[in-house]
Image (cartoon, rainbow, N blue to C red):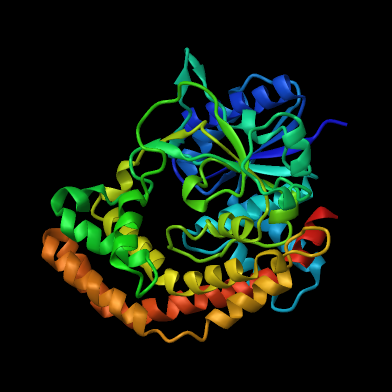
Length: 430
């Protein structure tokens, strides 16, 4: 039986060219690797854009081994409601809201993909983004799925025996390959390049705020230099891949694949309006010492103009601020995950959801003084930039308590969803 995979694209914007290219990658996976490729498009676009996407999907040339699913939010909601009801968990309305919130959520859209992948019987999920495109080499697209398919879910020792280059400790080689990914080239992954152009010092101050409080200045400076830059700008010239414990800073969520044993056990944070809320599993796989394949088929990143419009600018900046505030809690959790290491896994090398829930809940009691300091620094920096940044700083001033509360309640929601997740996955699978 062919391995069934889910190649997934969550989107809330026009991306017809991306849909066509993604279908080509699915056909490549089916034709070259013999997979059963389930192409899953989760479409939260407006009616007009979604209708155009439907026309593009209808016009796709059928490919052997590829099944296309184009689901709008109504279809997704029906599926989620049935799944939540079947799981029989308390407070089903809260779960439904966390899975399909009224506001933008990078984690929630991918969590929906995880549940649907389970329902479709997929062995792995391969995520792409609508504001990125494949590189070309010798006139042909450079598909990341080439490196994602061979070893996911198999013991790392088999990949070593198969000739994959490795720097993986021998003691970890019986564990399953749980992740495969690369990064991006092109524009910054977070649309704050204008801040760097306006004032490099302010850019360093602001980006440095995602470091843990009290971190040595030299380490914060190095973090700022590599933050959001991906793999730089050099184009693809030839394949390189390594079996390793993958550094989360070397992988982007527009270019990643997870084995089902990861995403069927722990969900992503469902935080709304928060950049970077979908990166949690990268840290979990790393800190638990699960093997992964790090390759160099980087995707080309670009920014859509909506984020720079009069309405899009403050909304996007607020997402960035919420990302900075979330770090108070996530650094606490990441530090403890790293300290536990193998303790995060059961005897079958699978992640222990109960331990993740405990760590998340423990973090919610942290003192918020560090986040008050972050908001003070952001206020000073944005007022120094002037213009619409100064106007945005004034808006933040009126939202400080709300932002502080949201940062903590987002973690509480993640803990609640993680506790409910195994039952949701089982309900989806059946």
